[in-house]
Length: 349
Ligand code: TXA
Ligand code: MG
Image 1 (tube, protein in one colour):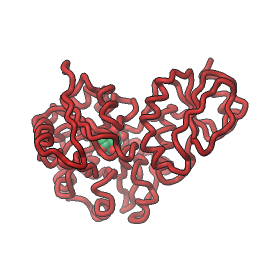
Image 2 (cartoon, protein in one colour):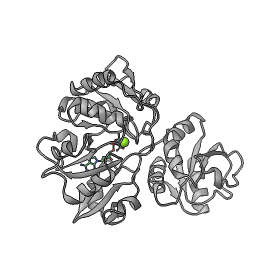
Image 3 (spheres, protein in one colour):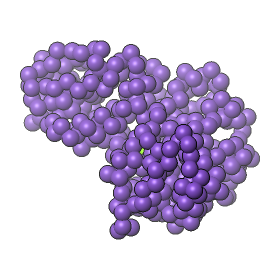
Image 4 (cartoon, protein in one colour):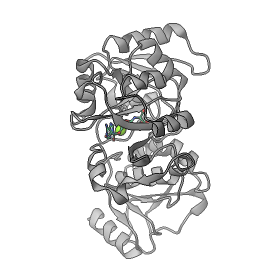
């Protein structure tokens, strides 16, 4: 792809059928089409077309070992991808959370190409809540594979402008429907003996899932299932600047050109030269999530030597936020003031 992507703007409140027909036809024909969803923008392609799938991996620079999730316009389409159809527990969650930001990993049918699942026996399916995303899938008439529309390891895009920055010269079409609503990706679950196992925290909280099924967190209990989620590298969602995360205030950490990322309603005294960069208010973490990735992108542009990120340390959407912030810091998390001072000294050199 040497030409620049075609930009198609679709107002989600007044969907233009002609534009949906154009972008849907591009998807069906095997083109690479960035699509809006309620979580982040996705890089969509016909999930039944191995050449198009290969194009998605190439555009992102994503290793073939990291499977793609498949977007459907409803349970009927999901049933064509999941062996035996959605099991009872998954159907219950679909009832409660679809359309919406929940991805369910289930045994696949032969219809799902191996390239989607990295050769594995399971496929992740999700029915997005975004009306433009669903209209595009229905128009294309095929399930749509869509990883986040960023280059591999980078911050997920929450606006069409971010997609342009990441992939504008590598894909065919970018559908712009304004900023994404949730700002963090879907929650990914698999199932074990009727229990939902969270592979990735996301826009549907563990607490909300637990109102419908027994839930556990893969990270704490199950290294094997965790290995079954190969995309979950510790370094991910990364700004270009080195970053460390912290659960404690900086205290008397050394001075420097440091961007301190925290919460407006929890401002803490900072060492000399450190600049405060609020993610929003801790009492409104939904809004923090919505603007999280745009803020991380902006941070890079302020050219600090180091980013120090205060974790939210909260339940609900706080878990997804801290998961992404921890990955932005490549897993370097300080839990005492001494640890933080040591990490800052090591990073500032
Ligand atoms: O909100 C979202 O989920 C966005 C929008 C575009 O829908 N998509 C997204 O896709 O975040 P991606 O590829 O960036 O993240 C999907 C995650 C990856 O970590 C991948 O490894 C995991 O889901 N995944 C996909 N299929 C899987 C499978 N069969 N088994 C285990 N993990 C899987
Ligand atoms: Mg991603």
